Image 1 (cartoon, rainbow, N blue to C red):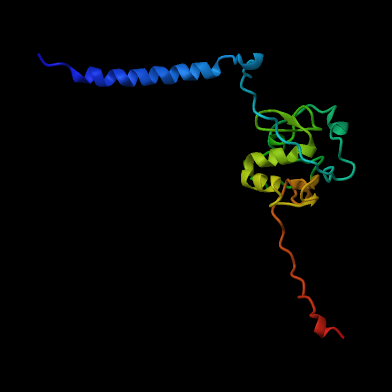
Image 2 (tube, rainbow, N blue to C red):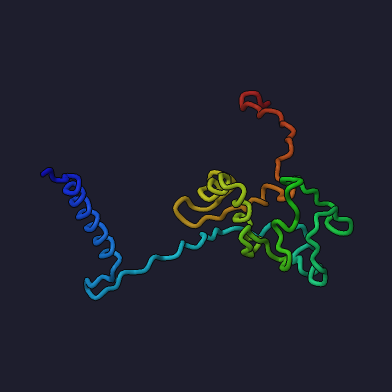
Length: 186
């Protein structure tokens, strides 16, 4: 009578699998070493806070709640005819509206896509949701301006210190004449 050898090849694999599973269970079990208990998995670390200056608000417009506290929010996209008429939204135009970034009910805050309200000093987090590559570069000092010590405290300029959040593209600059060579100075 012929034996079924496939069963004998399968058994050692089951032993290895059982050993791996047992090791995984043992590693997640409480540690009895020195009376310590294994720590549960920690939540994701909080977003690092960056030292930034006060945002460059137009004088007289902040806090926004001074005017908006008595207004009923109107989330409809429309042309603004009474206030903020100087704001032209050239930032993903046709796809964006004021309340995509500004919080509907707390006008002194912005809000992220997940609904979390943030201060204007954290606007880099809002910008970083769409401009991830620029945000990554900004955090390490490659994009934007950062001052301070190379191995110490640093201060970062906000995106809005260089870019108008409603119309962020840089306007063309008029070229200046080249520098004068020291030998040509008379």
